[in-house]
Every structure is written in structure tokens, then in C-alpha cells.
Image (cartoon, rainbow, N blue to C red):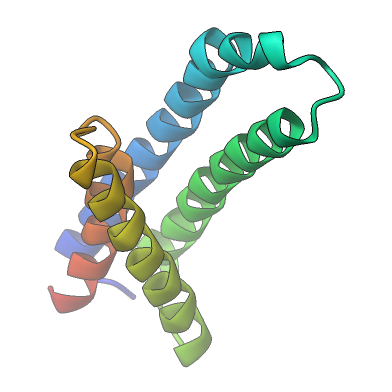
Length: 123
């Protein structure tokens, strides 16, 4: 069982991942997808960008589900630690890339949420 602090950190990560899922989906439909319309409905690059954008949404949702599980059970084995570390390393890289372009809003989703989950392992 995780400590109360660990569980609280993981529940905060759940909330931020759900917010990120909703916000990222909304941003896609409100801004990104309309900007791609001039390319036409059969443009493969536009299609791939939309699919990739939506796939990322489900990373946020999957992370929320895992953090909710871990808030109740703890991260119990090497496989779960590997999943968390893969997500954390990937999100750290993507966050760094966004930051290098002067885009700071994604940092909450990309650094804070996996950071909370990783920090939960040390308390």
C-alpha cells in the first residue's frame, strides 16, 4: 500500500492527466484540426498529424488510469516501474522540445504529471 503522501501525489497526477486529456482534445478540435483543413481531407500528412494528436490524448488517459490504480495499490512490480519510467522519460524529452520552441503550456501535462508519479515513489 502506498503512503498517504504517495497516494495524494498520484491522485493529483490523475486529475492533471484528465485535465490534460480534455484540454488536449479541445485544442486539437478548436485550433489544430481547423488549421489543417486547407490541406484537404485526403492529405496523408494531415491525417497522420490528427491521428498522432489523438493518440497522445490516450496516453494522458492511460496514465490517469494507471495513477489511480497506483494510488490504491502502489507501484508493485518492475513492469509497472518500467511503464512509469518510459512515460516519464518520453514526456521529459517532449517537454524539453516544446520548451525549446518557447511553448510552456504543455509543461504541466508533460513534466508535472509524470513528475508527481515519480515523486510518489520516494515518499
